[in-house]
Image (cartoon, rainbow, N blue to C red; front, side, top):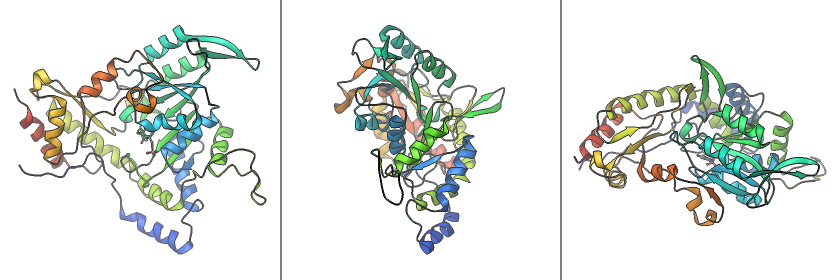
Amino acid sequence: MEKLNIPLSVPNLSKDIVPMIEECIETGWVSTGGRFITEFEEKVANYVGAEKAVGVQSGSAGLHVAYRVMGVEAGDEVICPTATFIATVNPMMYIGALPVFMDCDDTLNMDLEKLEEFLMNNGQWTMDNGQEVLMNKNSGNKIKAICIVHVFGNPIDMVKVMEIAEKYKLKVIEDSAESLGSYYTKDGEKQAHTGTLGDIGVYSFNANKILTTGGGGMVVAKDKNILDKVRFLSVQAKTDPLYFTHDEIGYNYRLTNVASAFGVSQMNQLEGFIENKIKNYNLYKEAIKDIDGLEILPFNEDTRANYWFYSIMVDKDKYGIDRDELLVKLNECGIQSRPLWGLMHDQKPLKKYEAYKIEKARHYVDNLLNIPCSTNLTSEQVGAVVGKLKRFSNV
Ligand SMILES: *Cc1c(COP(=O)(O)O)cnc(C)c1O
């Protein structure tokens, strides 16, 4: 069998970064200070329509600090999806917070009807330090926040999320690690970007994300004081810069100047990346609609998603082979594909936490396949993948 080499999602770097890296070397600004950090932060803030953004070393680091500044403490519950990458949940573990796992709906995002039902049935108001707060009446713990994820770059209905959060006095953390560039639209007009509607939003620039700095992340927040706090905690919570006094426990989470130089270069290309993602998605979609038993999942209406990952559903009865067989065949001929993440509430360290009526997520874990979607994927490569998808059908 001919061997292809089509990776799932790889970086797309440009040489215009070289002079910036040279500048880092010549000036010695390679660490957590330097002009590219500010420049990258400003570029991202402008792009997403936020007043300010704070660069951190990874999306995970950003989420860790985000939970902290949202007031999540040990023993507090945070509602989050079960269908996500584990980096949504790990930082809760660092704090000692308790996840409550929610199901997904057919958009792969958190099922907001179940979220409401859960809060209505299990939430109970209680007094805490003279303030009314929500308690989970089964566990007796406070419910502090909701962390939503825009899965594969597909924007969740944030209007609904914020409505629910307001009703139950919960903070909203937007794990926008996968959704840089995704925004809402109204009558075709651009509205807010994902990450900017919740109390705090976090982007990731890991190597497989739409834009990469090698490793990195960025935090945006509605409240400027919250964002200042993020920055403060990311540089070891130094209260006095000369005498080194610290009144709180911080982290070494600041983004480096070298990583930021990558970010500056990548930001110039981001819209072009998304254009290519959309073009390739449409090529796949046209071809896949003629293959019995395969369906490419759509992105939500009234949004301009960044089309980060493409997902297809495999119906064994119609396609002839199941998802796992197809996955093996694709990978064998050099087309890198993979299933949805293992669900969070099935992971060994997370099994003991509450999971609320998980049904749909299981179906997607069993039948979903992510196919190559790099920003530099060519139409010839899309054609090669489609050719195999047609050939492997066994009906
Ligand atoms: C990638 C990712 C993260 C973590 O980002 P890193 O920069 O890799 O730490 C968090 N949440 C989701 C949903 C992700 O896809």
